[in-house]
Amino acid sequence: VDGAVVDALVVGVPTDRGPPGTRTRANTPTLRPGFTLVGLLAPVLVLGIAAAAITPLVMNLTDSARASRERYEMIGAMHHALDRAARLLREAPPGGSGGIYLVEAGPNGFVLPDGRAIELRDGTLWLDPGDGSTWPLAHTIDTFLVRYIESAGVTETTDPGVMQRVALLIE
Image 1 (cartoon, one colour):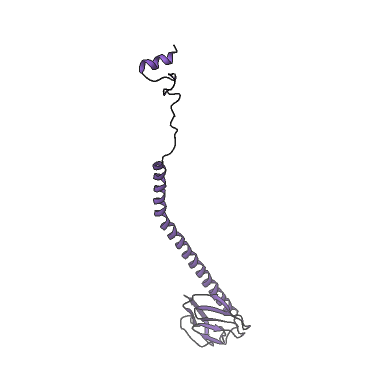
Image 2 (cartoon, rainbow, N blue to C red):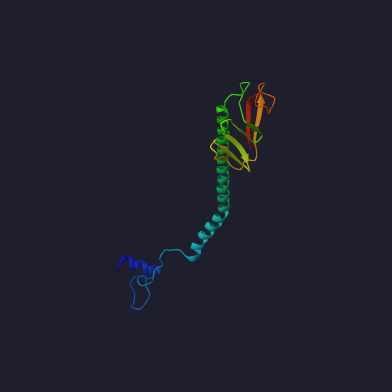
């Protein structure tokens, strides 16, 4: 007799051999490793809860990034508008006392002798290049303040004859 069969018979474990029609290890269906439905649902449930918790955080981050980008673009437009206004004023012909000669000087803009102008209207800062057309420099502007300063550098004036400096403010 085979040694493995003898050991199995002694212990009482069924052998691979047996009478026909009886269940033995050879003809018993074996269980294959795999996943159960409960085993699959548990990780899916945990991942769903984690996704539900993380989604508002991601949405807040994207909203914050969008708002930052819009603020950055607005600041860039304001810098461009200030630079353009300062360049127009630097190019202006000198006035009677060596200051800047302006045809019209107001709190919301100015007009140069050659017709070029900058003016705040309806929340938009407009550039008139002197040919009758207008170009928007910046939108959503609440304040465009032009302060005309005398030669002492302290006193504000509206008289173009004594004006030496100009302070620009955009909000």
